[in-house]
Length: 176
Image 1 (tube, rainbow, N blue to C red):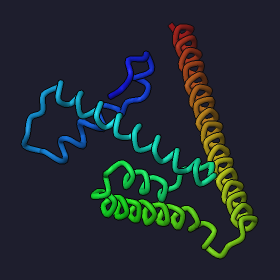
Image 2: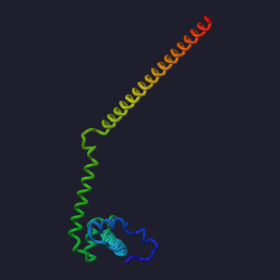
Image 3: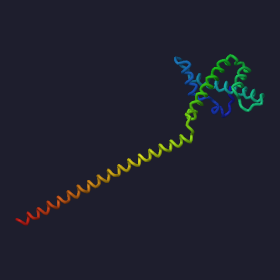
Image 4: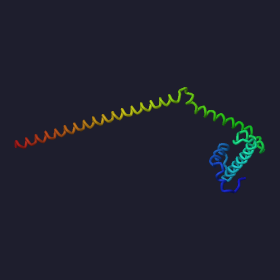
């Protein structure tokens, strides 16, 4: 299996991913921790074995990138030919998902509106939003000014009535 170098931890599949696969595959079965660890090590070794063989096949064909065909040839040469039909199905599913992602990301391009026009519309919306925000701020400021003026008038009115009341008291004191 794996060598006893210090890099073994760097080259393993995350345990959480393996645990999830085990639970999905065997929902009603309990699996001991050492068995889970063994599955992680086996998966890591299998991936290392297949990728190394695929890399050799890639190099022999003077390519620099391992392709799915190289992986399929590696499975065949390592004696895992029985997996090839499933691998091809998964490969097709991956291609379908990737195509859907590309289509989703190009929806913006498929709107039929040039990017410059979309940018202009966006700037227009931003300007409209800034204008509305400024108008709201202006209204709030006017309301605060009106409230301050009303408070000043109320204070002046109260002060005037207090002065009138105190001068009336002085006149009453003079009459006594």
